[in-house]
Image (tube, rainbow, N blue to C red; front, side, top):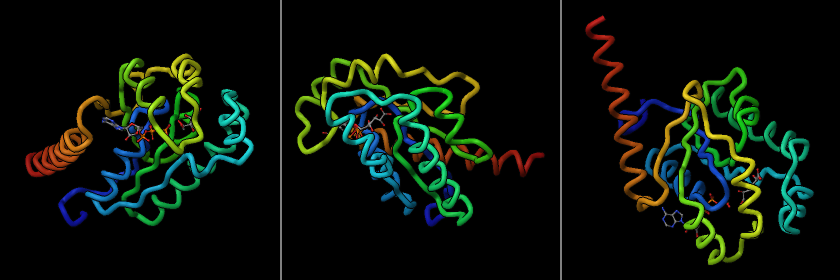
Length: 183
Ligand SMILES: Nc1ncnc2c1ncn2[C@@H]1O[C@H](COP(=O)(O)OP(=O)(O)OP(=O)(O)O)[C@@H](O)[C@H]1O
Ligand SMILES: O=C(O)[C@H](O)[C@@H](O)[C@H](O)[C@H](O)CO
């Protein structure tokens, strides 16, 4: 158990660009004392160059990047330390690659596309141009019921999202303890 009674989890904060993945992932890592990795920092330079030039990535471009993301998660799992990674994880096959043989869970941040367009237009110092938002939205595959995904509303204040997530983690711990005591 961690310092505030929450067992280590291995989370990918996912969603199209501008949904607030970095904001939520760093907030969780700080509050829970878990390790954080910015998925964007693992992109090969060729991917960053492509996106900066306004070209969407292909499955082939994303494959080696997703493997680096999975390697990071795998190392954290071996170390047993709670960990949070940001990664768009837009398609089911990408999410399957990330969690292959690993106890990885996803937090999907939903935001209305109009709000996203506004955020991306006003964001400074980021390589991702707002012009790539339509391709992000077109590529995105809604996670299925069978995928280990928690959905959150990315239009709420980040503090509200973080409070709800941590409460949900606590509730799940309590449920488990109850089952163990009863069963
Ligand atoms: N809940 C929120 N409400 C309002 N603004 C937010 C919220 N979360 C993030 N933002 C703002 O939206 C912008 C995008 O946030 P952030 O960089 O965390 O998203 P991201 O999903 O990591 O983006 P990318 O994948 O493109 O790197 C930032 O300017 C951030 O301050
Ligand atoms: O799969 C992708 O197309 C990429 O990961 C993008 O989503 C960006 O890296 C990220 O969102 C930065 O804005």
